[in-house]
Length: 324
Image (cartoon, rainbow, N blue to C red):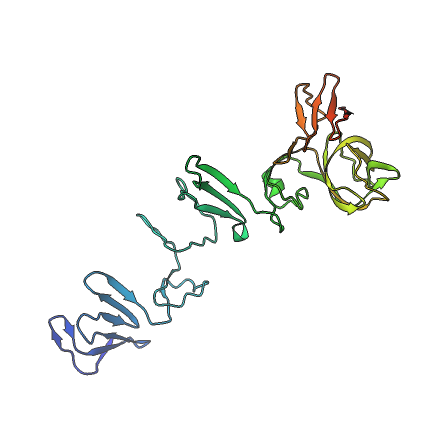
């Protein structure tokens, strides 16, 4: 097929100036090299190469982006001659500066470390609901801070530590409506029972009832009563396991009438540190007479030598729980 040159007006070269336009045809596509005036660069098929003595520029056609390779097209609406896309791998041997935001669609691997400036934060979640930063607002006490979302929406101010196979997708169910900052440690088994249809056993206002839901329950398990009719929501402990259908909690939860539609979740072990108290579940194994249990608010409990948990209740009275 060959290469044919159609001279549209002759070629005159004066120094480094081309005074005409040359058209090249390979039999497939006709391209144009145009250099009408010295110093304005060379245009090849719409791509202009120009040097002004300081920079060498590649300028595409207005409205088109520049692409290196042909394995794909833009997925991010590139639409300017100032936009660049590479369809293969990209390697930089020196330092790279990103003066705008950076979006990474896959895994980001850092060989050494990630650094930030003072008071700059790493955002967690949509809208940066959680923020990790080095805070220097107090000139006498710079500190690391984890800023968690405040109350008023579904983002609760809770830092939960637990096994990766349990907390990544688990509906924990413990922290609905939490407004005070909380740090929680979850045991490896995660939650073992939950429901939205619990009731109570007749006139026994501390007994939670539902068929077959408490087969795995043991004394000392923590239960969060989230909501329900005629109940007081909150954190409770299992004081006694009656059978697979009934457990007695450490205090009454029924406020009057029949409790129904009780939403609850149970864990063998959840440890909670909050600004209004510390909750450490009672354990029925590995007994230690020296262990203390801070049960939230002003309640305090401890294990005695008879393997009983002694609790000072909010009203100042004592309560004993036998550890089996």
